[in-house]
Amino acid sequence: MTELSMTELSPQLLLYIATAACLFAIGVYGFIVGPQTLRRILALNIISAGIFMLMVVLAYRGLANGQARASPDPVLHALILTGLVVAVSATAFALALLGRLKQTQASPEHQP
Amino acid sequence: MSLLLFDTALCLLLLALALASMLSRQLVNAVMLYIAFGLMMALAWARLAAPDLALAEAAIGAGLTGALCFSALARQQLDITAAALSWPQRLWPATFVVLMLGGILAALLQLPSVASPLVAVAQAELINSGVSHPVTAVLLNFRSWDTLLELVVLLLALLGALPVAPAEKSATSWSLGLSWSRLLAPMVILLAGYLLWAGASQPGGAFQAGVLLAAGAVVLRLNQQLNWLSWCNFWVRLLVVAGIAVFVLVALLALWLTPANVDAVWLSWPPLLAGGIILLIEVFATLAIASTLTLLVVGEPAPQHNRTESV
Image (cartoon, rainbow over all chains, first blue to last red; front, top):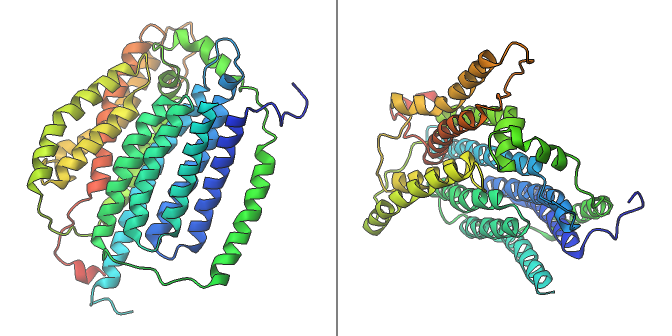
C-alpha cells in the first residue's frame, strides 16, 4: 500500500483523471487566448468543470478498489455541490457586470 | 471492456466539446457547445457514482448557465466574430498550457488509490445525523457551515448583480414557448418537491430541488409570466433572505434545546430532532436558492430614469 501506487489506479480512473487535467488545460488556454470577455467566463466554467471532475474521481477511488461497504466520498460530493452553486452565482455576477460594461461602451454619451 | 469503451467515448466527447467551445469563432456557437458540454458532464458524473452532482449539473450546466449566457449574448450583438489570431498569439499560450498539463499529469498520476478516511467517519456518524443519505448528512449536519456560507455567497452575488444589471430589452414571448412553459411548470414543481423529500434517503436534496425550481421559473419569466417575481416585491426579498434567516434561527434554537450536560456546539443538531431540523432548513433553502438564482438569471429591469447622468 505504501509503495508508489501508479499502477494501482484502474485504467478508467486514469482516463478520467487525464480528462480532468485536459479540461483544466483547455480552460486555461481559452482564458488566455479568447478575445471576448464572455468566452473568458465560459473558459473559467470549463476550468471549474475540470477541477470538479478531478474531485469526483478522488471521491470515486474507494469504489474502484472493490472494498467492502464501499461508497464514494460524501464529503467531496457535498463540497462539489456547494461549489457548483457558487460557480453559477459567480458566473451570473460576472455576466451582469459584462452586460453593464457593454451598455456603457455602446451608449453615445460615454466619451472619456 | 464495453464500459471502458463508453468511458473513452465520453471523455473524448467532453474534450472535443470543450475545445470546440473555446476555439469556435462565433460566441453563439461557443455557448451552444458549452451547453452540450454541461449535459455530457452530467452523464460523466452519473457514471462516476455521483448522482447528486449529475442532477445538479443537468439543471445548472445545461439549463441555468445556458440561459444566463444567452441572455448576456442577447444584450450584445449576436454576430460578434473575433478577429483571427496570428500564429504566435496562439502558439505561446498553447506551449505554456501543454507544459503545465504535463506537470499536472505527472503529479496526478501519483495519487494513492486508497479512499480517504473521511468516508468511514461519515458512515459511522450517519446514524446520528437524522437522514440516511450521506451527502445530505454532510451538507446539512456535519458540515453545515459550508451550506450556510454558500447561501450567504448566493445572496452576496445577487446583491452585487442587482445594481449593475443592465436594462432589459423588451422581448415578446413566443406563443408555443408560452404554452409549453405553462405545461412544464406543474411538472417542475412536482419534481422539485420529490427531489427535496427524497434527499433524506436517496440522491436529491435542497440544492437540486432549488436549481430545478429556478430553471422552471426562468423559463416562465422569459415568457413574461410570474411578473411578481422581482426584487421590488417585498415577499420575494423575504424569500431570498429566508434561507439564511431560518438556518441561523434554527441553529440558535438547537443551541437552546441542547441539554445542559452536553457541550453545545454551534450548528450541530441534537440527534433526535435532526431529521425535522434538516427538513425545515432544506425547505427554506430550496425556496431561497430558487428565487435567488431566478433573480440572478433573469435580472431586473433597471429603472430607466437618469441612467445617462450616472454614467
